[in-house]
Amino acid sequence: MIDPCSLEAKPLLSLDDALTGIRTAIKAVAGEERVALKKALGRVLSEAVYSPINLPTSRNSAMDGYALSSIDINPKQPFVLRASGISWAGKPFQGELQAGQCIRIFTGALLSAPTDTVVIQEQVKVDGDHIVFPATVVAGENVREAGEDIAKCGLLIKQHKKLTAADLGLLASAGIVDVLVKPKINIAFFSTGDELIGGGQPLEPGKIYDSNRYMLAGLLADPCYNAVDMGVIADDRQLLEDTIKQAAKHNDVIITTGGASVGDADYIKDILAQCGEVKFWKIAIKPGKPLAFGNIGPCYFFGLPGNPVSAMVTFQQIVAPALIQLSGAAANKPLRLMATCTTALKKSRGRQDFQRGILTQDTDGNFFVESTGHQGSHILSSMSRSNCYIILPAEANGVSAGDKVWVEPFSVFI
Image 1 (cartoon, rainbow, N blue to C red):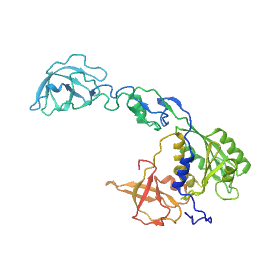
Image 2 (cartoon, rainbow, N blue to C red):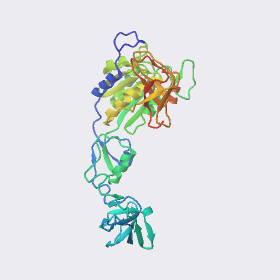
Image 3 (tube, helix red, strand yellow):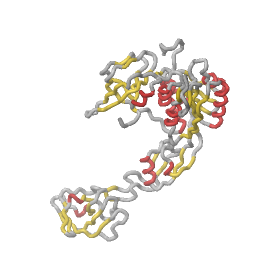
Image 4 (spheres, rainbow, N blue to C red):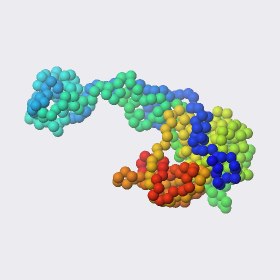
């Protein structure tokens, strides 16, 4: 597709084609390491894990109440059984239950033979050690069967899963204390530009504080990554080349911001071509057209735009999926919802647009989205205020208030 903001006649690469090219080029990191379960949150499983035991391990009660044998149930009228003991969670009933007897039982407590049914305490009447049961008792109710969740030798968690808190709990319930995971990805990142200075320094004319490295540090705060901030590198070709070459020796990925455009001091693409290979440069999205992807030997390289919103959009839409693939995790498409846009949006044909929006939901479950305002790639406040992207296709000419649009939430909570 032709970008109306560009003088180049060659069509820009679409986002889908760029992602396809990256998926083809990237191979997951090799190797594995065993880590303690408490340190495995967010790591990617290198192998499937199977349960060494039944979950639950044995038949037990799902409720507090009274356990009985279904043989004693009278389905036509209330009936009375004598309580002859108690089964606690962790301390089972030790006696031998006779016909006409029941036991007091608590949630999680073992159901010993011949008991096979639990009636919740709210449904019975207690008269000393005589328990009156209703005629509505159903055999087998309120019972958790052994292996009901996961049978012994059954699959607990599949390979390539990025472990969640729930996964850790499931593994722990099976007695597993450590897991085999993929190694962490080593990532180096830095900003480029003579205009950039660090926080705390005096702001001289023509200088700006570097925000991109702080954003990237946050975006790379993931248990699968070892991310190293290499600071700000000046617009000096030799210095940039030396820095990139050195970083490529010790890292799996290099991410830069700035220097990937077409200005006289934008050296990233040329350095990448000289030291390695440029897979593609420039993509048909807005913001974020000047993006370089390639490799220097086995080290993958992403040259992001310098404008902060462009850097964040391209990271989330392009770099993040690549890092997920590199980490060995299973790929997942981002959640997208259809919402009613309450504000008019400007757009020119040619590039897929990721505008910043505020997504809300009414009491009937309908989704609405409004623009955060000015959408310039330097307006970082638009990103701070937003909770979603409003995704406008390349061929769109804009949106009127009331139109339906696709949105991509940043979180499941809005």
